[in-house]
Image 1 (cartoon, rainbow, N blue to C red):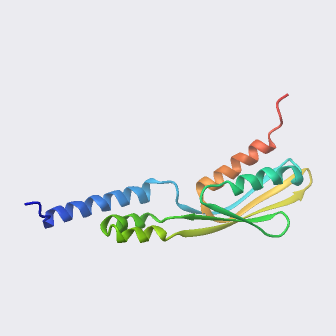
Image 2 (image 1 turned 60 degrees about the vertical axis):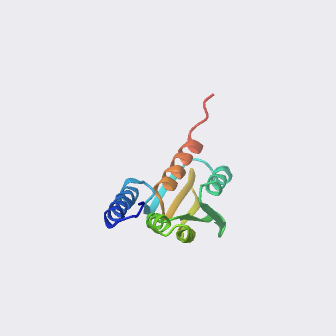
Image 3 (image 1 turned 135 degrees about the vertical axis):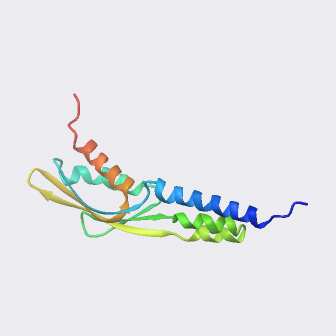
Length: 145
């Protein structure tokens, strides 16, 4: 009476493939290669604490200190394709949610004449790069009196 036929399975598969394609190409959470340099007119001692706080509070990110003025930000995410086995193989498919992709980015602060040179190099999400760039603009902006 409530049997599932081949047509239903094909329709469900086509729907799942359409959702996966929409998630794959419709999101901005793609990995990008970053090699950005921001000259900031603030001394390193003043920019370092807020920048470290920002990097430490990024979602799905882990911050590790390196040499003085250098940090490594590791960003994790679940790939888009993990949703398909979760749906098709539920409940065993929930194990696919444990699979994570990781990317490392180095953030370096170097003192230069008239301020600090902030460099970000590596692989990360576009949102991480944009967040750091906006935060540096906020820190470097002159205070309104």
